[in-house]
Length: 112
Length: 111
Image 1 (cartoon, chains in turn blue, yellow):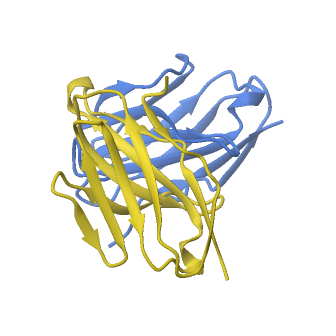
Image 2 (cartoon, chains in turn orange, purple; image 1 turned 120 degrees about the vertical axis):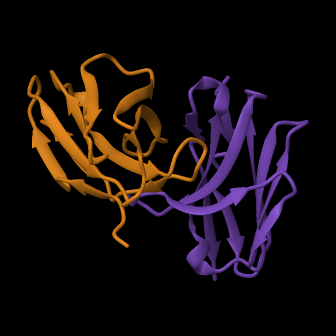
Image 3 (tube, helix red, strand yellow; image 1 turned 135 degrees about the horizontal axis):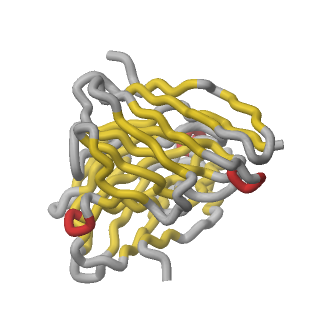
């Protein structure tokens, strides 16, 4: 069974640009979560999608947004990139609320 | 105060030692709990769920204390390969299923 897949593996952008990160959940999983992990720090919850709807979001500005498609894959968009957006962005999927989450390898976003 | 708190460590222990980590949470409505391990610059991997009655998986034992609002992870007979950061995660049913990870406890097992 294929795990959670994320693309791209690495992404290099400059300040002010926009970034799009993609995630495909494990087959059968309807919930997708996005987290930000800056170097040496913990996971910060960004967004949770389930059945195509945004269910919850963390304390991040509106320039962090996303969506979930009918096939349950998801995109995270970050507009007006800032230097402090440099981090590992992790996507996880689960069967539903309160079920264990399974993570992808992450996208490493670097802002120059 | 953070919603989920862990002692960051590091915990440095010799092979074969028993080590325990705690994770405290602030919201009594929290309903689901898990432990993950994260190796350096890798993604977190699910280690085990935490059930109210406590549960064991080989050398690993997880416990939940709802009265004191903490979960624990006990590792017996530590191996070098257990060296990693251990993250707890708490899920709140009352906040649209919000999941909060602790910042992790770092364990180094030495020969």
